[in-house]
Image (cartoon, rainbow, N blue to C red; front, top):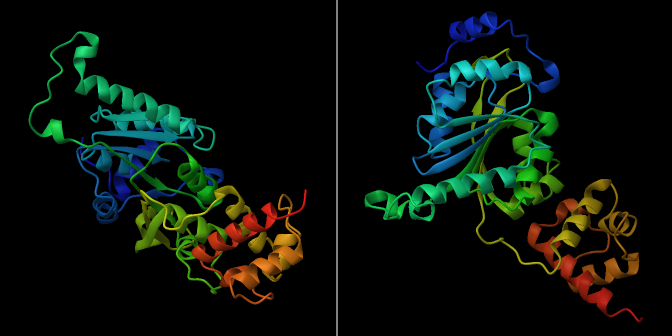
Length: 318
């Protein structure tokens, strides 16, 4: 089967299956061959890669991914798209379609299974199927796990955090997102777009915008430009912190009401046990003014603030 990749082919598939676009799922199907090629090129998808695709839609991008990757696991929430995917991916045995809501789907269990399957292929002697010797390039093969997704705005943040906080270590993630979301995630300290999501992305990944995509590349056309957001997951975090969970609670408190000073935001945030005096003292130790706002602090400064507050809390009289 040839790649799907133009307006006419897409229209024919939709008509043949009597499919109606569902706005609740944010469905905009990518049909531009140049952009599809750029996605797999930018993600550097290769023959040793196992790719999680979120929202395969009609299977257009899935075809491009499966033609290069070792395996593609495509998770689709819309049951009406499952028979379409069965048709468009019929010639791609390495593409596995899962009908599920990605926010409820057990990603780690799925990739545990994939890892086990891969180990059995590489070491068949465990099942009594051979010597287990691996020859040539297979002996040096390092399986990499990647994510490629075209995400609607309303699930971008929860999906991203689920992937970053799970136990499966993804090497690379490439998201097609609303351009404004991409800019927010790459924003600099002090800018209006800088916030908790920016800091979370920076803590877990090296992130950059790898290109923009015009509405004309989709059917139906969205009302905004999209961007390709490339994220390489850090093997080691860029900053050290005593209590990671506490640091993120401080970040959320700092941006919960942006107009508040950091002291007032943290002291009044549910789940944080610090007084205003403790926050002020921690800021003083860091040589930061008491009226500083969260948007002015870098990731390293939030980590330092969290550690300072941890030390102060340990000094409290029992």
